[in-house]
Amino acid sequence: MIFMKVTGNKSMSSFIKIILQILFVLGIISLFAIPIYLYMITTDSGIVLSLLGICTFPVMVSFLIIYFTAIPGIALIYQFIKLFDALKKNNPFVIENAIYLKRSSIIGGIISISYFIVAIILLSNSIFLYGLCTLLIGIIFLVFTIGTYILSKIFKQAAEYKEENELTI
Amino acid sequence: MAIIVNLDVMLAKRKMPLNELADKVDITISNLSILKNNKGRAIRFSTLDKICNALDCTPGDILEFVKD
Image (tube, rainbow over all chains, first blue to last red; front, side, top):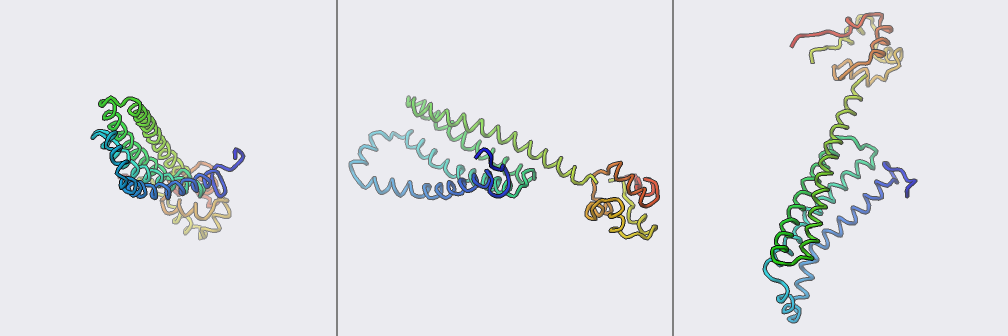
């Protein structure tokens, strides 16, 4: 693995692209499958009663917010598929890649804010363990957002330098 | 840009086709076309030197400054 090419055909980038495509499909499937699965198990009255026991209103809201962060999550994977596609074509420093990274940072920001909201809801309702875990994920996504934003600026600068260099005869 | 490349004028004066110049200065036709059509951002002294040698002219014959 370590001796593989980084960009181009049959490289690490193409390998990661395949994994991302699988994740993308699995993400869409689970996005639709989870509500169907929940609907199927809640037809059992015993489970409904036990769910009502643990699911207070703030917990339900938290679950819903976390569920809907799957949509930006899938969009994020889609941006990375496009990015790795450009890497597969051996052409990393193009302005499109800077745009994909910038979009990723915006999506990461949305996910991060959602998780912070959930953390606040959970912590204010004295659900400390899950609240702290959610806070941690929020912080990770915040770092991801800042990182991809910086990378997008670097890629933009690199693309400009490359264009300048190519147009110097 | 205020700097205009008059390579086509010099080529016409010397009655030299672009591909012949490309052969002489060892630069691809596509790069010379970029230069000729004023699409280039910069020109290296070495390139200018080669073109001036091939066309027997000075940089002032190829480059022109027009005030905006």
